Length: 153
Image (cartoon, rainbow, N blue to C red; front, side):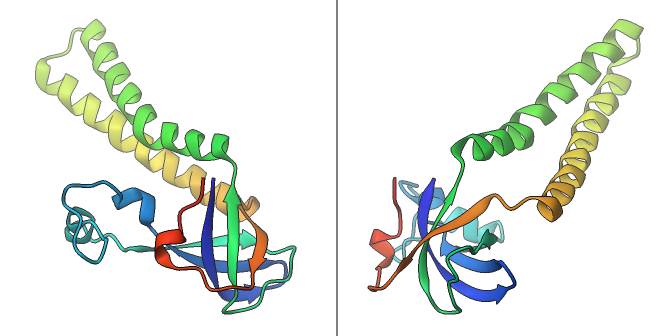
């Protein structure tokens, strides 16, 4: 996945980049005139996303850059966040059913499986984030890029 971003800080071989969350709100029937999604705004979401990017090209603060992340890695994270917690909740429910516990305990077990998975995914993401950089700067743009051109294929 590629998109345009702006470098907001640089350290050693990494850069902190910021981009607009265009694809997340695109096509939403709740989108505002400014292009943002009112649901995301109400949920406390921001239209800006920042990430640590591998800066092998030597981009400087203020540069407009193209960043890229592996599609497979993004799909893996989506699977961890959206599918795995539901599977763990269902597994906990099934185990508590096989053991013969009441409906209340099955519900508690499901909630524990759901919350426990989210805590595990959070811990995993913190460990991976410290050891691995998923975003890479692939190009430094020398011309201005508008927000409508922000999304790439």
